[in-house]
Image (tube, rainbow over all chains, first blue to last red; front, side):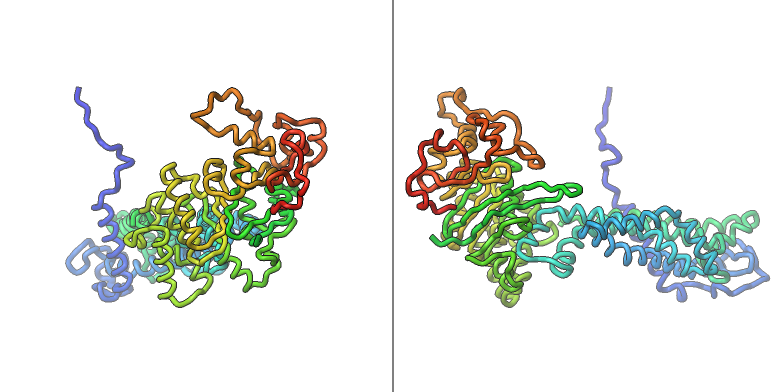
Amino acid sequence: MWTTLSKPARTAPRTSAVIWLSYGILAVVAVVVVLADVLAPHAPNHQDLTSVLLGPSTEHPLGTDDLGRDVLSRLLHGTRVSILAALLAVGIALVVGFPLGVLAGYVGGWPDAILMRLLDTVMAFPALVLAIGITAMLGPDITTAMVAVGVVLTPVVVRLTRAQTMAVAGQTYIEAASSFGARGVRRMILPHVVPNVVQPIVAQLAVLMGFALIAEASLSFLQLGVQPPTASWGTILARSYTFLERAPMSIFVPGAAIALTVFALNIVGEEVQRLLDPRRR
Amino acid sequence: MNVLMRLDDVSVRFPVGRRRSVSAVDGVSLDIVAGQTLGLIGESGSGKSTLARAMLGLVPAAAGSVSWQGEEVARMSRQRRRDFTAEVQMVFQDPHSALDPRRRVHQSVREPLDVLGRGARAERDDLVRAALADVGLPAHLHDRYPHQLSGGQKQRVNIARALVTRPRMLVCDESVAALDVALQAEILNLLGDLKDEYDLTVVFISHDLGVVGHIADRVAVMYLGRLVETAAADVLLDAPRHPYTEALLSARPDVHAPGAGDRIILRGDVPSPLAPPSGCRFHPRCLHATAACATETPVLLPVADGGTSACLRVAELYGPRPADATRSGTR
């Protein structure tokens, strides 16, 4: 009887092809965000009612939508809107959550207890439901919607940062640093705590970015986020959903963009976490 | 004798739950004489490390005082406190976790100078190189990260970091316990050499009697947060004057001994410091305990050869107290 020895699939490192593909996807997304105006063959909101719901052609590589707008141009411009919206939410979560997490984890005691109970309250809201509620009150607008998503994501960052900070604060090198008088933000938090805390946060940010992209798409799909005629991945998706029978292809384009970007973010996040490990240097 | 640091009735308590606290160190008085090596021994949980941290001011003393050259540390001005920090340094037990994994060796060693704001950048780098050379770390390792060094090399880096401020007193908290025996000897010899070179006073904490006997001039024995005996190292190893010290010594492995038959075997574990025994804290495990030991708390009193012992029956068990008791250098 023949037996073959092979590494268990779970412990095998991710092949570099997948990682490079992910870097490539993110690079393309970044280029599109910066150069959408140059790359797009048509104005994103230019209507041509004589050519609606066309299939792919040389003039319209991804066809046209129900108002005769070029889908590729809308997708390129929509990328910028979607990515910036997701960055806003993740940025808020990071800027608010990281310092609070370090504070709670390092100081402990009653500030920690109060903060954590407050965050439990925020966490009790499902992210999208809270965003829907806020936009329903303040009027549909992508900025308010994404701020709401950012607020809901904040506790995730705080909790992870706090847990990591508590682990680091118990290390001997922190005690060693205080033995020669290092204290405060400049001598203790920034040089010793933050660099040793940041590694898992980076990986988490990539996951949150994916979540925020999907949140943008969902909110825009529900007409609560990006408002027509502005293109975003969510609005293109919502529009093409209406004409699913007549132009089935155009719903896959923004869908694939979302899926691929979230996929690439997850892979790259994991890879960056690995690269940040000091034992690799 | 020039007393460098004086601990006067120092107690350290940690809160446990509500309105309860545990005394890790209870009423310890100790003089650390300039130029001497003081060995501090005791079982795990006896409060040795906490006492070391109290010496450096890393944990506040709940009662009593620590004074440095006659000045109470807790009342020092900010500036004096900085000087004190530079003059008393510590080498920690685990050489690996005492170094920030994200800093290169020379960055870690330079940090005390950065924090204390000493000299210009170039001067600091020179001091760092000198300190690393003094502990015998080859120059090509100065830019490495801690995980790229061996345990012995890491402990050398820790010692270099403690010495870079030119301290007068070095507290070594189980500094060789995490190393294998060959490395222990190497690091101990290094510490001995550096003690002469840097004119250091050393407090050496260990649970290893062999190590302490090798390196220390004087030894203080702790049990459950209290000092039970102090004596010159050779006197203590030869003729202990406290039942606990006696038991510790008899527990030493000795291949030349005729047998373990006459070994003193302590029964039970160290009692919880949350509820320390009344009277003499050692009495539940002591072979010589009497009814009085459970009610009366012994204090450290001078015995022969300049030592002190906290045992109610010290005179009966180990001979009469010397007439000129005040001769003792340690209170």
